Length: 385
Image 1 (cartoon, rainbow, N blue to C red):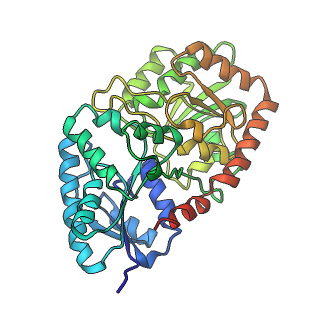
Image 2: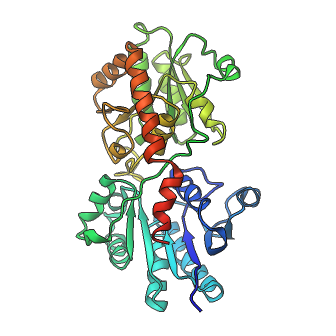
Image 3: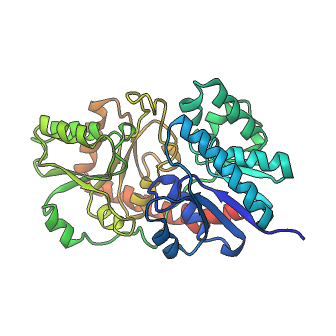
């Protein structure tokens, strides 16, 4: 009997907070639940999360570390559980959310049972793992044998085309945004009071506190612009390993009162923070300082869409795949994050021109609704289920 069942192995999935987790949750929640299974780790609070999501999640004890050893062990466990689950559900296709850790499971199922598999890629994988001859070989083997390769942007596709993979295997499907949740709204009075934002010009970044997100560049720009714009403040939403360094930087530059660390914010509360700001800014760049993530970059940038869906102008760094998320000179500006003068002039050009901010915000809003709503993105995935 022909099976309609598919298996997704996303790697990251709620309750994990990440772009990858958001991508797969938002798409799979709009697909037929009874035929689409999701294999993911037992992350903290998974039981409460699964109850609220009401999806066909299958949880197993699988390590979540980023070290190469963890990824290899994770790949073996994903393959083991996929083989076990296939005996019951007879999957007709495997969706591998990460090229190494779950790509092995797809490749093995294809070799043993002829089950086709799809691999999703996000950018920087070949840089981060390319220094290892073994991992580089695995990447090529898993992708060459995949039915489809799904990059999140043209930039990411071009990274993998450099591996001499067949161009016809690629099908770009970008992330999206829930325009019913992320939408323009009045500034929340409670948050204005909490962070003392009345009468202030607000810059906002929503991102993990990692080097490649460029928080430090914005903090330096705020310090340089402090005398010119005494009401300028910078909200940072998120947590990460860079927090201690960034807090110290703001103290060293005497802008600790202007740089507000908001910590983790629940997805349902995020629209309130986007609507607090005048300008959304994320100066993404390629990671260099941290040897564990050297070569990492922004493959797309869902947060830019979320800000646009709230009608906000955006400023992005010019490295990675953000050109698919931000339309330069239309929904915002893409600038050089390594050039402090350019960064400052871009911020100033917006602060001084409310009409321009409104135009960029309105264009980004219409673009998000027309081209990036999750319903549109899920229909693209549905075509290859």
